Length: 430
Image (cartoon, rainbow, N blue to C red; front, side, top):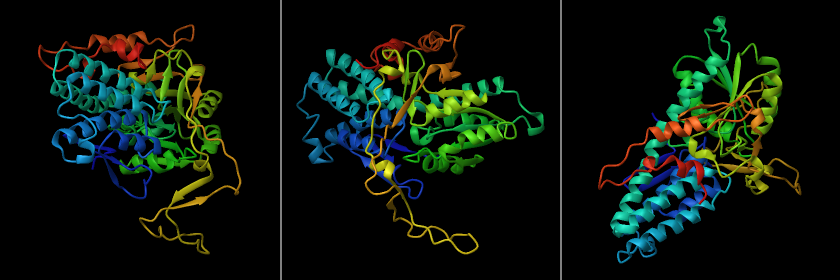
């Protein structure tokens, strides 16, 4: 069974509520941009690619409801039948601007909004209301299709790079182990994943010995979500707490043939500085000290050429209650022999304090890993490495993307992936 974090069909959008995983699998319908904004902000959906997709498709869901009149409260609020092409385009742009405010650090959402605004503005210039809606819907739906394809390419490129740069051990059947952080798989994308896509590719080629995945405090995206995906796909894996990573690299690097730390990204600056889930920077420092390769896996839409360095990246700070509490089902008391029974109260999640009452906590959602600590950045168009000066060379992957673009046929709506690469690479926030 394929794991689906986003279910979409003909304007009907549902997301798998990631706050309830891995204990419950509950899908939540997204009817409009307000539903999407709150789902993103609450982290019912998370992961930079998935956030962008849900936001873009929420506008489609709202537009379809308005056209069909299936929800009068929504239908009366936006996209009225009497609206002109320009008014329709303006409303779409307003909704996209609103959605971008849900989580500010990840660039994919702003990038998608920029592309989609270009499309609707062009449609409004010489088309009708229906043309504007039609071209927006086609472009947003194409994003969903392209994301899976791009992730599979990231997986292929990253796996090949690791196997090329790490000496394999014939006594271990030439298999490598890797470490990953947070969740970068199907739950964070349209499918397959970025960093977890590389892991899936290694596993598919029978080159993976084991994945060590961090708990990823304070929201436990690793233990809750990455573990859920790895177990779902029968990929050999072991959970560690965030504070065990140094000991793991120190004591098991050789015995487990640990080849790389692989992480995703929420925003990559021009110089390669990378914002990702809090704790990524610490892993990069440990990897460098222990001689383990450190890879960032991200589509080109995550590369923000208007952000020169990590110092310019705004880091989201979340409520301190996320650090002070933890949520899950109750378990039975431990028996004298140390065993425990299965979970009690299935379907009933409880939140408990793990800190002393009155504790103050700091809760940045992301940190920035300096480019100096990153060995390579894996994109859907290839692996970006540094030149002799230690500077990441982006030209090849963006030029490769430009070379593969085809002009649309006359009279055919221009899909999102046919936009010039320059819009993505050079002007993601305009």
